[in-house]
Length: 247
Image 1 (cartoon, rainbow, N blue to C red):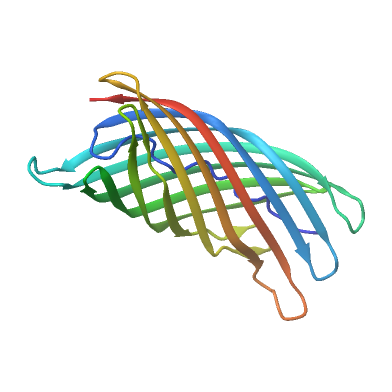
Image 2: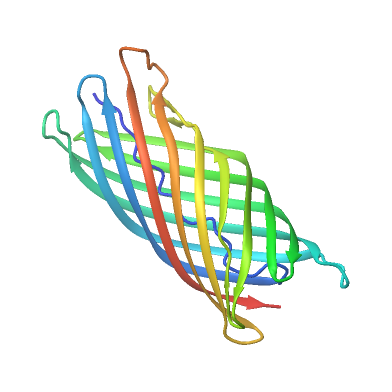
Protein backbone atom coordinates (compact mmCIF):
# COMPACT_ATOMS: atom_id res chain seq x y z
CA UNK A 1 0.00 0.00 0.00
CA UNK A 2 1.27 3.41 -0.91
CA UNK A 3 2.09 5.63 2.06
CA UNK A 4 1.74 9.39 1.86
CA UNK A 5 1.27 12.26 4.26
CA UNK A 6 -0.43 15.56 3.44
CA UNK A 7 1.53 18.78 3.39
CA UNK A 8 1.88 20.90 6.49
CA UNK A 9 -1.07 23.27 6.64
CA UNK A 10 0.90 26.03 8.28
CA UNK A 11 -1.01 29.02 9.47
CA UNK A 12 0.69 32.37 9.62
CA UNK A 13 3.35 32.93 12.30
CA UNK A 14 3.35 36.68 11.67
CA UNK A 15 2.85 39.19 14.47
CA UNK A 16 0.72 42.03 13.16
CA UNK A 17 1.04 44.43 16.11
CA UNK A 18 3.58 47.24 16.26
CA UNK A 19 7.03 46.97 17.81
CA UNK A 20 7.39 48.29 21.35
CA UNK A 21 3.66 48.17 22.13
CA UNK A 22 1.83 45.95 24.61
CA UNK A 23 -1.12 44.20 22.99
CA UNK A 24 -3.15 41.03 22.57
CA UNK A 25 -4.77 40.23 19.25
CA UNK A 26 -6.77 37.71 17.24
CA UNK A 27 -6.92 37.00 13.49
CA UNK A 28 -9.19 34.88 11.31
CA UNK A 29 -8.30 33.88 7.78
CA UNK A 30 -7.67 31.25 5.15
CA UNK A 31 -4.78 29.04 4.07
CA UNK A 32 -3.97 27.78 0.57
CA UNK A 33 -1.71 24.75 0.02
CA UNK A 34 0.09 23.55 -3.13
CA UNK A 35 1.00 19.90 -2.55
CA UNK A 36 3.09 17.55 -4.69
CA UNK A 37 4.19 13.92 -4.32
CA UNK A 38 6.45 11.91 -6.63
CA UNK A 39 8.34 8.62 -6.56
CA UNK A 40 10.79 6.64 -8.64
CA UNK A 41 8.02 4.34 -9.96
CA UNK A 42 6.26 7.27 -11.71
CA UNK A 43 3.75 7.70 -8.91
CA UNK A 44 2.58 11.33 -8.74
CA UNK A 45 -0.15 13.33 -6.97
CA UNK A 46 -0.75 17.11 -6.89
CA UNK A 47 -3.46 18.95 -4.96
CA UNK A 48 -4.48 22.49 -4.06
CA UNK A 49 -6.31 22.76 -0.72
CA UNK A 50 -8.03 25.69 0.97
CA UNK A 51 -8.97 25.80 4.64
CA UNK A 52 -9.85 27.96 7.63
CA UNK A 53 -7.17 29.28 10.00
CA UNK A 54 -7.12 31.38 13.15
CA UNK A 55 -4.52 32.73 15.54
CA UNK A 56 -4.10 34.63 18.79
CA UNK A 57 -0.97 36.62 19.57
CA UNK A 58 0.53 39.05 22.01
CA UNK A 59 3.47 41.39 22.47
CA UNK A 60 5.01 42.81 25.64
CA UNK A 61 7.76 45.40 25.74
CA UNK A 62 10.13 44.11 28.40
CA UNK A 63 12.88 46.72 27.96
CA UNK A 64 12.72 50.23 26.47
CA UNK A 65 14.87 53.06 27.93
CA UNK A 66 12.92 56.29 27.53
CA UNK A 67 15.89 58.21 26.11
CA UNK A 68 17.21 55.46 23.80
CA UNK A 69 16.22 54.16 20.37
CA UNK A 70 16.53 50.46 21.19
CA UNK A 71 14.44 47.97 23.12
CA UNK A 72 13.39 44.35 23.53
CA UNK A 73 9.94 42.77 23.12
CA UNK A 74 8.57 39.38 24.13
CA UNK A 75 6.19 37.91 21.53
CA UNK A 76 3.94 34.84 21.56
CA UNK A 77 1.46 33.40 19.08
CA UNK A 78 -0.79 30.32 18.85
CA UNK A 79 -2.28 29.27 15.49
CA UNK A 80 -4.49 26.50 14.19
CA UNK A 81 -5.42 25.56 10.64
CA UNK A 82 -7.16 22.74 8.78
CA UNK A 83 -8.10 21.85 5.24
CA UNK A 84 -8.93 18.98 2.87
CA UNK A 85 -8.68 18.23 -0.82
CA UNK A 86 -8.79 15.30 -3.23
CA UNK A 87 -6.60 14.56 -6.26
CA UNK A 88 -6.00 11.71 -8.68
CA UNK A 89 -2.80 9.71 -8.90
CA UNK A 90 -1.39 10.03 -12.44
CA UNK A 91 -0.08 6.44 -12.36
CA UNK A 92 -3.36 4.57 -11.79
CA UNK A 93 -5.98 7.39 -11.75
CA UNK A 94 -6.88 6.54 -8.15
CA UNK A 95 -8.43 9.36 -6.08
CA UNK A 96 -6.62 10.34 -2.87
CA UNK A 97 -8.44 12.34 -0.19
CA UNK A 98 -6.24 14.37 2.18
CA UNK A 99 -7.45 15.89 5.49
CA UNK A 100 -4.95 17.80 7.65
CA UNK A 101 -4.84 19.78 10.87
CA UNK A 102 -1.93 21.57 12.49
CA UNK A 103 -1.30 23.69 15.57
CA UNK A 104 1.72 25.90 16.17
CA UNK A 105 3.06 27.92 19.06
CA UNK A 106 5.78 30.56 18.64
CA UNK A 107 7.60 32.43 21.42
CA UNK A 108 10.44 34.83 20.66
CA UNK A 109 12.62 37.54 22.10
CA UNK A 110 12.65 40.50 19.68
CA UNK A 111 15.47 43.05 20.10
CA UNK A 112 14.93 46.13 17.93
CA UNK A 113 16.55 49.43 17.01
CA UNK A 114 14.94 52.59 15.66
CA UNK A 115 16.78 54.42 12.85
CA UNK A 116 14.74 57.67 12.80
CA UNK A 117 11.41 55.90 12.31
CA UNK A 118 12.78 52.84 10.48
CA UNK A 119 12.83 50.00 13.04
CA UNK A 120 14.97 46.90 12.48
CA UNK A 121 14.45 43.77 14.58
CA UNK A 122 15.63 40.19 15.16
CA UNK A 123 13.48 37.22 16.15
CA UNK A 124 15.09 34.58 18.38
CA UNK A 125 12.97 31.88 19.97
CA UNK A 126 11.16 28.56 19.66
CA UNK A 127 8.60 27.14 17.24
CA UNK A 128 6.44 24.17 18.30
CA UNK A 129 4.49 22.26 15.61
CA UNK A 130 1.90 19.53 16.18
CA UNK A 131 0.28 18.04 13.09
CA UNK A 132 -1.83 15.12 11.92
CA UNK A 133 -2.87 14.10 8.42
CA UNK A 134 -5.35 11.43 7.30
CA UNK A 135 -4.98 10.08 3.74
CA UNK A 136 -7.52 7.81 2.02
CA UNK A 137 -6.36 6.14 -1.20
CA UNK A 138 -8.75 4.21 -0.66
CA UNK A 139 -7.15 2.65 2.43
CA UNK A 140 -6.69 5.03 5.36
CA UNK A 141 -3.24 6.11 6.50
CA UNK A 142 -2.50 8.52 9.34
CA UNK A 143 0.72 10.51 9.51
CA UNK A 144 1.60 12.58 12.57
CA UNK A 145 4.54 14.47 14.00
CA UNK A 146 5.46 17.16 16.47
CA UNK A 147 8.66 18.92 17.48
CA UNK A 148 10.05 22.04 19.11
CA UNK A 149 12.61 23.83 16.94
CA UNK A 150 14.77 26.94 17.21
CA UNK A 151 13.40 29.88 15.21
CA UNK A 152 15.38 32.89 14.04
CA UNK A 153 14.61 35.74 11.67
CA UNK A 154 15.02 39.37 10.69
CA UNK A 155 12.64 42.15 9.68
CA UNK A 156 11.80 45.83 9.83
CA UNK A 157 8.88 48.12 10.63
CA UNK A 158 8.08 51.11 8.43
CA UNK A 159 5.42 53.72 9.23
CA UNK A 160 3.25 54.73 6.27
CA UNK A 161 1.80 58.01 7.43
CA UNK A 162 0.20 58.47 10.85
CA UNK A 163 -2.10 55.44 10.74
CA UNK A 164 -0.50 52.57 8.83
CA UNK A 165 2.64 50.55 9.52
CA UNK A 166 4.23 47.73 7.51
CA UNK A 167 6.30 44.99 9.15
CA UNK A 168 7.82 42.45 6.69
CA UNK A 169 10.09 39.70 8.02
CA UNK A 170 11.72 36.41 7.06
CA UNK A 171 12.14 33.43 9.41
CA UNK A 172 14.00 30.13 9.37
CA UNK A 173 13.37 26.92 11.32
CA UNK A 174 13.46 23.14 10.95
CA UNK A 175 10.39 20.94 10.34
CA UNK A 176 9.40 17.81 12.29
CA UNK A 177 9.62 14.31 10.87
CA UNK A 178 6.32 12.62 10.06
CA UNK A 179 5.65 8.96 10.85
CA UNK A 180 3.07 6.52 9.56
CA UNK A 181 2.64 2.97 10.88
CA UNK A 182 5.79 1.74 9.15
CA UNK A 183 7.40 4.72 7.39
CA UNK A 184 9.24 7.92 8.28
CA UNK A 185 9.48 11.07 6.15
CA UNK A 186 12.36 13.33 7.16
CA UNK A 187 11.68 17.05 7.41
CA UNK A 188 14.29 19.68 6.61
CA UNK A 189 14.23 23.47 6.63
CA UNK A 190 11.23 25.80 6.56
CA UNK A 191 11.47 29.34 5.20
CA UNK A 192 8.61 31.79 5.79
CA UNK A 193 7.92 35.31 4.53
CA UNK A 194 5.55 37.44 6.60
CA UNK A 195 3.96 40.79 5.67
CA UNK A 196 1.74 42.17 8.47
CA UNK A 197 0.01 45.55 8.19
CA UNK A 198 -1.40 47.49 11.13
CA UNK A 199 -3.93 50.37 11.06
CA UNK A 200 -4.34 52.54 14.17
CA UNK A 201 -8.07 52.80 14.76
CA UNK A 202 -7.89 54.36 18.22
CA UNK A 203 -5.63 54.65 21.24
CA UNK A 204 -6.65 51.13 22.29
CA UNK A 205 -7.48 49.32 19.06
CA UNK A 206 -5.56 48.47 15.89
CA UNK A 207 -6.99 46.73 12.83
CA UNK A 208 -4.56 44.19 11.38
CA UNK A 209 -4.03 42.22 8.21
CA UNK A 210 -1.27 39.76 7.36
CA UNK A 211 -0.02 37.65 4.47
CA UNK A 212 2.47 34.78 4.80
CA UNK A 213 4.16 32.46 2.32
CA UNK A 214 5.87 29.30 3.51
CA UNK A 215 8.30 27.16 1.53
CA UNK A 216 9.48 23.77 2.79
CA UNK A 217 12.41 21.78 1.48
CA UNK A 218 11.55 18.31 0.15
CA UNK A 219 10.31 15.78 2.69
CA UNK A 220 12.33 12.67 1.90
CA UNK A 221 11.40 9.07 2.71
CA UNK A 222 13.91 7.51 5.09
CA UNK A 223 14.68 4.67 2.64
CA UNK A 224 15.54 6.94 -0.32
CA UNK A 225 18.51 5.89 -2.44
CA UNK A 226 20.05 7.13 -5.68
CA UNK A 227 17.69 4.91 -7.70
CA UNK A 228 14.61 4.65 -5.48
CA UNK A 229 12.89 7.60 -3.83
CA UNK A 230 9.65 9.04 -2.46
CA UNK A 231 9.49 12.81 -1.95
CA UNK A 232 6.95 15.49 -1.07
CA UNK A 233 7.23 19.12 -2.19
CA UNK A 234 5.18 21.88 -0.64
CA UNK A 235 4.38 25.57 -0.72
CA UNK A 236 1.63 27.36 1.17
CA UNK A 237 0.27 30.84 1.70
CA UNK A 238 -2.17 32.31 4.19
CA UNK A 239 -3.88 35.59 4.97
CA UNK A 240 -5.74 36.91 7.97
CA UNK A 241 -7.74 39.88 9.26
CA UNK A 242 -7.97 40.78 12.92
CA UNK A 243 -7.84 43.26 15.74
CA UNK A 244 -5.31 44.15 18.47
CA UNK A 245 -6.16 45.51 21.91
CA UNK A 246 -3.37 47.70 23.30
CA UNK A 247 -2.78 48.08 27.04
